[in-house]
Length: 309
Image (cartoon, rainbow, N blue to C red; front, side, top):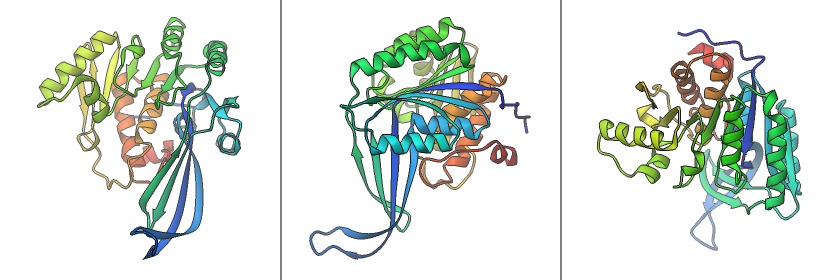
């Protein structure tokens, strides 16, 4: 097994859409008389940072120093997120937008099975985002790598500027993409779409050869150093000028894949910024993903857990 680098002095700046993940756990013993739905008697509530906040939490769990830049509403959910992030040792700068409701994803679980998800969200104001870009510029010199975590909630309206500024400062810029238009990610060091996200952009493929052609075509078109495709049970594949490298999935019981992409990009950034090359960083990220899919909900992977594999 490869030696893991020292991550204690590594500084990662995470920018993107944050959310609060709420879990209501309960018991289901009957069907409602009002409609054919289960009645959940809620017995326990859990709250966890989600989206870019979960990326930052994964960075911190790997022993690196995480700074987070995002926008929240002036509401209880935003305050809860700030408290949770502070408890995780994350240097979070959360710009408040009075017109915004902090994104909340509420999951109702009965007997550990997700029965329902309810989303509360809207889009941040443009002035708040402009202030965030100014702070991004100020924080650039104090980081070793940048993660732009796009969840399609509007918080990365200035992502093209952030990529340009980050690359001009000589920092690796890693992007977790969303949507069908990847032109806004042009010039990034690496983007990390999953299989279904890539499908939306390059269309269906019928073989690994065809996938490689489409992935390399997209990588060249966007002027990326690398494209990392996470492929669920098929592991992950890294595409670069020098060719491709593949890492098979770890044979582990999959409990919950939510947040696995956050762990992959956080691990990749921390390992790159701590001195590993892209291929070795991908191998470690693959191991980390194998660990978090065995946990319920948005979760993290620690250095200790990585060392045990």
